Structures are given as C-alpha cells and as structure tokens.
Picture 1 (tube, one colour):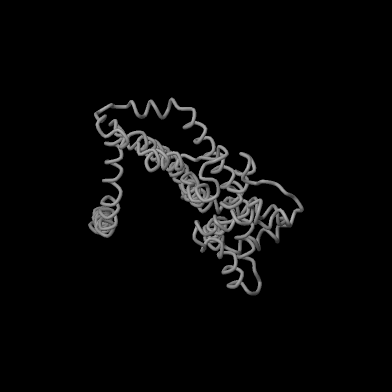
Picture 2 (tube, one colour; picture 1 turned 60 degrees about the vertical axis):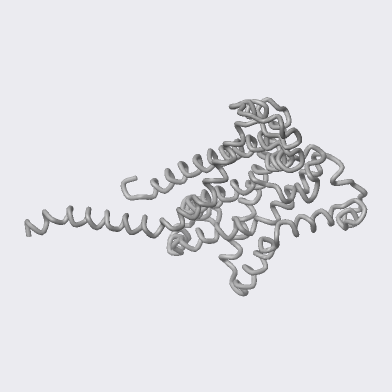
Length: 303
C-alpha cells in the first residue's frame, strides 16, 4: 500500500504530461495552418508600414521607420474614425447583449415549437452581411425606401452623421443579435433546473432568480459572447461600405485602411493603419481573456 501510494503522484504527473503532449499534437495542424495564413500577412504588413511606399509615386520609396505611424496617430481623421468605430462597437454590443439575453431566454423557455422559434430567430444571422446591408440601405433610402412611408416622414437618413450611424448600428444589431443569443443560449442550457426549483421553494421572485442564479452562472458564456462580438464589431466594414462608403463622417478604422490601401494606393500608411488596428484587436482580446480567466477561476473549488 505504501509503495502504491508513493508512486501515485509520479503516475499522475506522467499521465498529465502525456495528455498535454497529445493535446499539442492534435492542435499542431490547426496552429500550423493558422500561422501559415496569418503570420506572413501580418509580418509583411509590418514591413510595409515602416517604408515609404506610395504607388502613385513609385520612385519615392525607402525606409522611414515609424514615420507612417506618426502620420497616422497625428491625423485627426484617425482619431475621428477610431471614435466612430468604438461608438458603433460599444452601442452594438451593449444592445445585442440585452436583446440576445431576452431572445435566449425565449428560445430556452419555449414550451412548443422550440425548433421553429430557434430557426426563425437565426435567419438574420444566416444572411450574408453585404446582402443585409443592401436591404437596409434600400429600406432607409429617401427616394425608394419604405421606412419613411411607414413613419410618414421625408427624412434623408443617409444625409447626416447621426442618422447614418443610427441606420448602420441598427443593421449591425439586427444582423448579429442572433449570434449573441445563440452563444448565450449555450450558457443557459448548462444551468441546473434544480437551482430554480429550490429558489422557488424559498420564495425567490423571477427577477431574483435571474439576478442571483442565471447571471452569475452565465458569466463565462457572457464574456465569451461579448468577446467574439466585440472583436467582430471593431472590424465593421461591410455595412458602412455599402450604405455610406464613409460619407457623412461615418468612416471606421477598416474603411480608413481600405481607402489608404486601395483608393489612395499608399501602402505604407495603409499598412500602418492595419497594424494599429491589429494591435488594438489584440489588446481587446487580451483584456477579455484575462477577465474570462478570472471569472472561470472564481467558479473553481478553492478559487
């Protein structure tokens, strides 16, 4: 018995190392594929960002160091577009989180037709983003749209900064709320129904059950959903490009990078914008992952 007990930690440690090795071997093909399709473009973008490379003036090229980054960060347009991007991101994610929670609860508590309800709710997310953007542009167009007829107005929705952003944000919310609801639903189904029954016996109201049981147990799912949606919202491009092409001061960081790279053919400045956007995305992901890890640790024994 003593020999068996003494050997247990070594056996467990060896098994853990074996499982970790197997996990790395299983993940290796996906990691290699991801590096192959992402590492080179990111590295090449950084190389271009430290050069003066404007295709309109091919003879004026050379290494400029961080000058392109200084040009971008010193531009008022960059900060305006960054503000627009964060504004669209924060409002979209916040509204989608609330609506997604409501929709997830409806899908989870549906007594009959649960499959039909879930299918109908997910339809907007299944529509291609460009197609959805064209549909919203047509709906709010001042000459051919039907929204003005419904509200009895002749408003030019795409003629002003605020109204244009409102339509863009509404389109984003309509398109991706089902995605948020689907991720939140995955968290809802993991909650033990016995907890709700026990709370009912103790006299807890519906709001108390939601606040004291549902939300705390769904924190990991909420953080994952908000993380995915935040990263996607920061890279907003399709809706703005289709509806306004950045007019009326509605440019996002992605639109700014597109204009520099494709329209103005300035590969140096455009690459600097791309690298800065990449760093911001990495920073957002890092903050969320750190927060997610802390929330998960709270639920562990002894955490």
